[in-house]
Length: 521
Image (cartoon, rainbow, N blue to C red):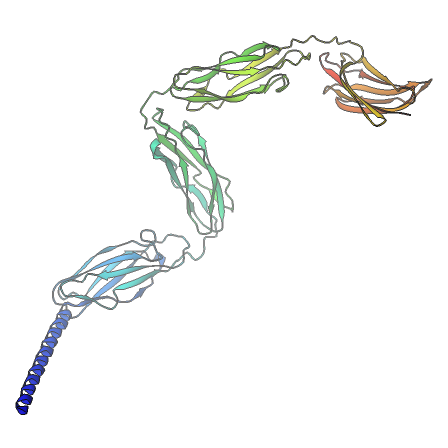
């Protein structure tokens, strides 16, 4: 039984060995067939793993080799891929399929290299093989690196010339923005700047486009920059096209300006022609109001059209009247809705109880919006009729305008403001103060005289048979002062006299401010 059992085991072992040997033979046959098939169809590879064209070469040609017995027709795909170089600006992106006929062993791929004049340093991109067909395979070098050697090692010695790339641009009103390119040519050495600003034409700033201004900066080697200008879609029918300009100015760093002005044309998309927003004009050129009339009203008319909403600014401007003391200054904006043709400006006048004669101020229109314009009468004069009685020009002495008195311990202070009128040279106004017995006082007299008219101011003290020295000053219009000590029992006298040889206006006031300080002894 043992022997039979052993024989059975041996027989089974031989069968297993035979099976293993058969499997090995079949694997070897299959491997050999596959290897032979690959050898027959071939494998694809670039000649090198790295390529180094110069930026000025214009192009580079890469050769793809097919190794093997080269039986039958096969294909392989190729494509470029960005590294630090950018397809389109640094090189020409390509992709496609190479077809190898039977026995054909090489094909070529041509790629454009762009010489862009920018200092960028060396840049690279990849070229990759893929998808071999009909039993062919990929070999050793199937994704290779192409490094473009930059030839812009140093910028030109010149800082260059700055210009708009185009001198005319057209934009639809609904586009919202227009972008303009500025180029730097004939050199790019050093850092330079250039200012830019828009200017209105038939298009209106703020209504058709946003006022735009600023400064462009170009660093060494930089050769282009952009400006963006917002366009206003105002939803109002206008002329079919409107234009404005943008200008370059004040280059720095030695740069110059070439084409420094560009014109932008805005095409209206509202289709509501003709559009007439009108003209703004003040109804009258002259207005009068008495000083106690409180308020003057000026009508502003919108003529020759009232399409759309529009606005116009107004402001007062003094002529002989002074804002704040003769009238209340006013400034603002009148708003006209579609169809409105009338609005009003109202200005209050001040009833000041002082005789000044008739005085006037202007009301001025400016800055119409929404394509409206200023009409024939944009400035009106308003005359304020003085309702205060005129003081007699030859009235002797000064008239008291205001006075105050207060004490600080034993010291008493008196302050008085006087006014008077001088209408001819030699005419004199005077005033005085006497120090009480037992007092020692100091009188200071300040004078404010009309500009351009000269006066003699004198201050002296007299009493008890004595006369102290006279302090006399010639005033050239403006402010002057004089001071004198006044012993008890003495009188201080101040006089203002029209200087010989001068002409005087009887309506101009002379003010004298008297400050008195004295102490009882």
